[in-house]
Length: 558
Image 1 (cartoon, one colour):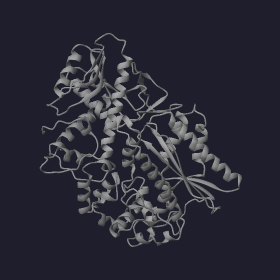
Image 2 (cartoon, rainbow, N blue to C red):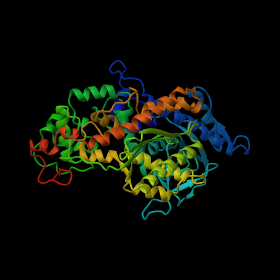
Image 3 (spheres, one colour):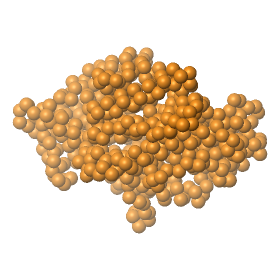
Image 4 (cartoon, rainbow, N blue to C red):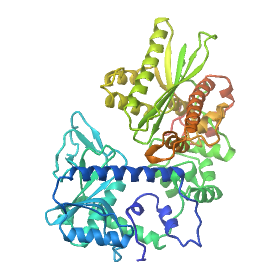
């Protein structure tokens, strides 16, 4: 086994990224971390500082020595301070750094170690939500235990469900294994537990670690072998690629060999590789029935169509002779802007009255520029909701049909519901029941779903991918989700960042372009222009692959 020392980050995610991260620098060259990755790191660090300050305040009345804050500048000093605090029996050790375990090739730090019995239990702080509120536990749902922040007192919690993420569990497992090797773990490793504090920072979730100890051990061995160059990896396109600093290098390799992962992701790509289909060209020429063990949300025939489109540089392929999307007399396009898990700071709207050509199509944003989280978010949401319902009721009163549109309702629905829940005590906030009724109605239309229903999209279904096919382009060349996060942080001076109010206009323009792109796209779907795109059935007929009959979408895989 090589001498690589792995942190918890190295235990999950893309194996090829790990190999590149540990390869000799004279053999590989990658770009800097993406702005999105740096933003997430900075946001996580700020959240951890806030939580540790909170824990410190909760312990402020305790005797001296109860809480030790490790704030030494260098690693060796932090390790020494952590070890000394454990030797002294400190009840809480904040910002703890454990001695590097050279024998097993691992290093680790915990936001907190809390003394339980004669040992210590690791606690980590993460910048995402780790529980979901539940009204009534579902049958078979694992029992969650939570503890208050002021001490380790875990009790069954029927109000929450655990939102487990593998990277959190692996990090806690690494810390538990390291404490166990030092003889400092609070319990036998098979019975050990870790603590997890999430974005809401309202409790500590107890995470059982004994049941994943074997998986952790196996993962560490394999990952160390990869880092040492003893296991060969190859690039594959996965979701992680979007924020990876190695992606330009990997993308160039994948395009050069026309790798099938460019059009097929996840387990489906593995199924294809197992039957010898490794390139886009092979998939484009595939004949016969789909692989026997094909499974997942993407139909096999769609992957063949995507491959053919990639080879021929076709941006979209029709599923139907005549694509369709719901239309109405009065149409409102909606786009929400949020910042991480902190909240939704903007609701942008664009109203079109198709029955009155004299009524201008006007962009209206409802926004707060108070740094999130902020109660002012509730005020801006209430204003947005009042305006939307006023226009809806006016349309109904005039005998006109009404529809509101968004692109990928998952995000909008999350913050519609979340805003109703979090700001229920503010004036003008709709009840959760009212919001849910609107979301379930035919008047709330997801254009993203309409795109998937009408087209095969070889290069993805994101609005930035699809709207240009319909003739729309953003005014700002840098417009995008990652960039908007940077603009927002500057616009409000988030977490001490220098405030640049000029970025507010940039965000408003970006949001306006998003709602206008949604409008242009759905109108294009209803137009005759869309009929110039090829039909999926025609492309599949060239191979006679998987087509024995057609359903409402025009394609069926056997």
